Length: 470
Picture 1: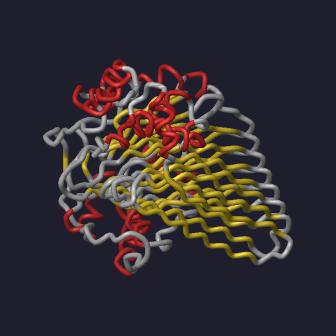
Picture 2: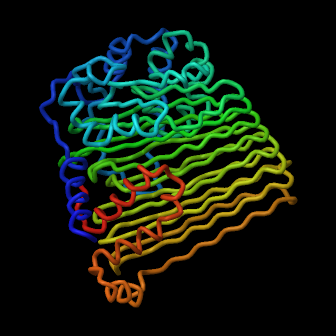
Picture 3: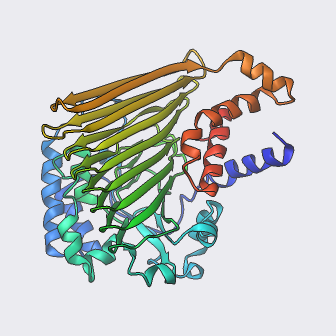
């Protein structure tokens, strides 16, 4: 790596991934989870009556459901010490100049709003529990595209639409942390793309959890109407603290007839984070959902985007890469349910483990009775960089229709010493040679991202190889 390039990576490490702001002026609700705290949060948010009731019902379900007894241990997560709501010292702005200086500096170091000016149709930026900035290009809004924060959508002209779709795909009864989300959700984005509108440049939301010992519970609801298309990008980060933080967001995606949605995520949570996010898409006739996922941070991660292929000829693609370093247990994968006829799904993932990191890939393919002509293919490749690390593949396949075609392939390997030697003989250091090999291994994701985000992902890989994140 050239000296200038090396310096850029080190600058990113110092100024982006370890930004701390423990003393920023904010309203912080007391830790714990009680009906009184949930009711107080609901009043703080100015919820309509139906949402206030929904929160309290979700809390009841949360108290009834057990903590999942499979996957990574959640022993270090204690809700009694997690603040479920932290309000930053500003209201949401649509002019970047009006965002408070300390918050602005954090996002500017992360490339917001520079990325907006270069390549995005709109940006939402969330700091702790609330959005602090939201904007969309005039030419995109002129086509009828709605991109706003969830609270504004719930209380404004889209209130009926929010009530119709909110937590109908992911219900509070799905699992304990979905119920938790239903009780204390705050922030997030609402997107509606009208019939036939092709949004040619991406929209993005960026989530920054800056408060110590807090949780972030944003809700994203996207509806892509008939014949429309959209690329939505989600970015996440947090500084490292010596206590547990929690991310339990929720993403619900509705892809209507002959519509297309690509949902890309680059997650770089700090290594004290429990990332228990839930994402789900419902795809109608001739529709298509594409997931692109890069998971690099968090102490424990449980992330399995799910696609329900309800309509005939609907399709799903999932492309993902996971990097688990020291002290990380990342349990990731994808799920798909084939309901319509002639539906297709394809999962292509890469997992990398280093310095004792644990990477587990879980896939779930369900072909319902009547889903004639369904085709599904799962391909998982794992790269272990040392003998301390671990990589597992756990496929689950449930086929109830004889006229279907389902396959699964898994490979596990290590970096070839001969390849490292060859690159070093061409003038590269061993560190740079290994980073280059790993970047190439993760190319299936980076090539699916816009240039700026592919560069960011490769920088994250280099930093992980150096062991300098978190």
